Amino acid sequence: MRTSYFIALQSILNKETNRFLRIWVQTLLPPAITMSLYFVIFGSLIGSRIGEMGGFSYMEFIVPGLIMMAVITNSYSNVASSFFSAKFQRNIEELLVAPVPNYLIVLGYVGGGMARGMLVGLIVTILSLFVVDIHIHNLTIIIVTVVLTSMLFSLGGLINAIYAKTFDDISIIPTFILTPLTYLGGVFYSLTMLPGPWQNVAALNPIVYMVNAFRYGFLGVSDVSLVLALAVVVSFIVVMFSFAIYLINRGIGLRS
Image 1: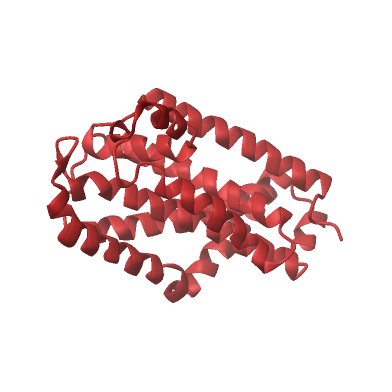
Image 2: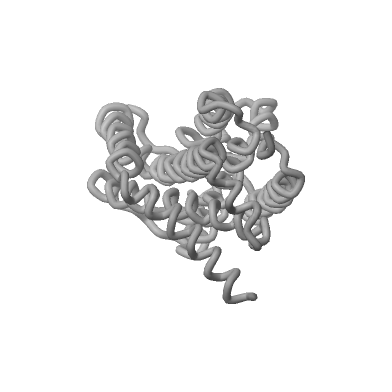
């Protein structure tokens, strides 16, 4: 039984991975181009005018945030589009009636989103080497943070897809919630630059903790406690994973 479960999980993972690799021109190339534009604009044009931030050049300071932004966006969008497509085409019903635990279905789709998110993050990291010298303060923190973040937003994309009724619905959350939270998550600035009350408001943004934990892995500096940052991410993962399992078990958004 355990062997059959492993095969089922492996099959879902292979399908999800092959899906975005097969259309790499649409899934991997655009974020690489977008991030390259960020590097050019902020590195060559704006960065030199801003000067140092936190003891580092502006480009060195924002590169970890830009990498994290690419990971977040692609992890989320991959699962949201893939799971909704399976639901729209009624393919998901084949999985739901198969003798496969629902948590394996969740893990399979989330694993595919994580694979794309981390692969795009790696591509962006390689591109950044052409514009800035990357420092690595703690490789373990970098790996742990990117894995946890990609997992969290893959789960977010899955939940979005479960509730979505049309293809337009899967773009509402990224456009009106995810993008603003990302840009206000400390990617382009240090939270210490904000007035006191706004620092408290920023502390409510979960992306702040991910960006700062990731930045600590590269530069050794963070605006928030590293332990608190990782605890926040893990807590969100537990809650969202449990919620995703609950939705699938109840058939919410899946039964017509």
